[in-house]
View 1 (cartoon, rainbow, N blue to C red):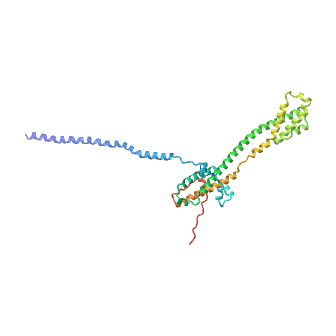
View 2: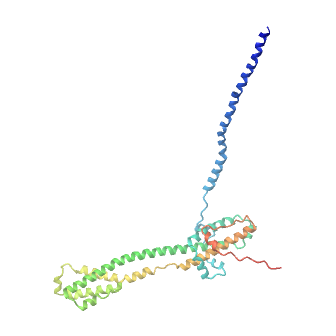
View 3: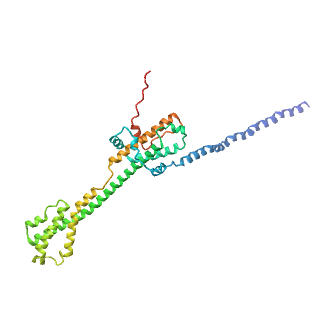
Length: 335
């Protein structure tokens, strides 16, 4: 009976071992947690919102001021007082300054800066305006007027030069055609006279030497007179074609001679087209550059005293402003 009791006791370890093997299988589901990490991508939404905000702010276009708009805001263009604001400079100094910068660059930065100034000063307190002692309403109005005047001078000159070029080209084309016809008529008349009358000094004298429209016109008139007196009124008329040198053709030759004589006058008229001299444009370019630079400096000093007053920066004139010599440093007096 002792042997039969020991047999069940041996089965107990086997029963315990079976549950131990199942433990790894119960831990396996825990390994699936890393697979849930892709859901973290949903956390990128804030970054997308930030990008949307940047895009929205970048899409807001900066206001583009026009010269005409600024003129209305200051109550009209009046450049008369602008020159008086620039003391210590001669016209030659301002012309030399204006030659360094193209007018469109001055207009581009001028309208932008004056537009900003008009917007800013409307929001400044009286105390802040006091920190801009030279930026008065009168100065701003005169500066805007000077800018408009400089723009108008530049545009007038550009238009006049364009018209002058177009007028000259058109006149030269017309003059060339007229001159060619007059020369051809002169040569034909000379050859007809020589053919019918033989070589004669008076024919060569009538043909003359051509150098201007007037001399070409005179040659036609002289040769036509010889034709009428020496050929058309004589027996030599029968040697010509019946329809040659009839009344209408003679009148046409006279008309060509008269128009050819006016070639010189037409050329002079084209050359004499009134235009704004470049020196006048350069003068106002120099005035506008000086007024702009003083305005920028005034706001810079005001910003040093009160950071709420903004700085003004050049864009189109940035390279020019770098070449402007800074004012000499002030040396404090010795005690």
